[in-house]
Length: 429
Image 1 (tube, rainbow, N blue to C red):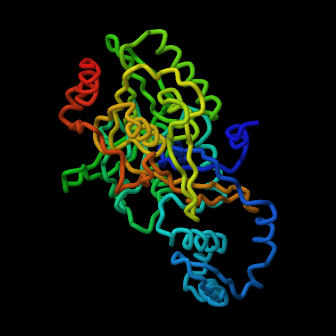
Image 2 (image 1 turned 90 degrees about the horizontal axis):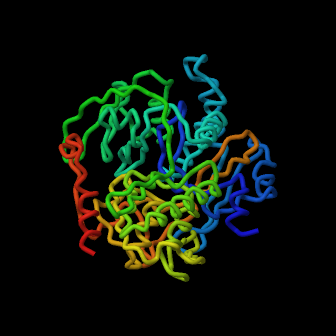
């Protein structure tokens, strides 16, 4: 059994995607990698000691590489716990379960990594439900953090969010007139936006290059999220890949294979790979797609762990699209897996990339959902490096070879200057 097959069977996955507000509760743009779960012995050891008996915890090591021991006296924690439990003026507000989960969320959030989060049992349940299937109810938009602000990565095509006028890059500052705070996690904010089909939600946003907020009313609805499709524009095949997720990695790979065969049957003179608004998905899916465009042994992406060890992921099979000119179209809504694919084709001189700078999301999260109470923790465990060894992040996104903006006015008028530019480039080859 291959490593890809083994990892697709695990319950613990790696994510580097962007949160998607597309379900009644919430879902995610997800990316599965090759991160193994903690062993049963480790989990058993972690939970074998009663918290009331823990007095000190020692942590060894630091980022400087020098050995250091720091002792944390848990008596302080329990002293504050008991003060709040027994002395707070409103006894009805004392909820030990809420105190417990909030304490865990607090120290997880102290790492200041929006992708590293703790989900209580209810949140874990809705998270898992949100990753299954293609049909959702919600507004249809992917959200992320950038510069400590909640931004719209991209509205899904044909979604209520897109129809209402929400655009990639919009900064959300309030939901139903309630201002967002920096203390809220992305999951907290999603919980405010979620709701039943047919119900309204009002997002107050600030559009890029503007400082004037305005309201967008969105009626939640049923959303179908296709992974990919294609269309022919004269002799050019436009492959639209909206996400790298499906019901399973195997299903995504199969759909990609079908798409490639259909495109080949049209004998196109060129291919436009449209990755705009693609928030990511299975890591293996991005590598699988890259295999069809690049020669064997070409580096697609690298992974760096906390010890600085780097693993290379190379092309391992014969590509089917090697001899067809390619142009990749990206925007600020292209993230994680879509950036990996775009970066691989660009840095290996296989394709010209046009559009605007991508989102810049290059970390992998291990999702551990085998905790005793069915809660889960998503922890960043690796960085994704582009073929040149640079870390993909907000400060180092995919920069197009040719920058082409797509303004609100052009969008409302039904134009698409980025697609026009891609067609022009291929027409000149």
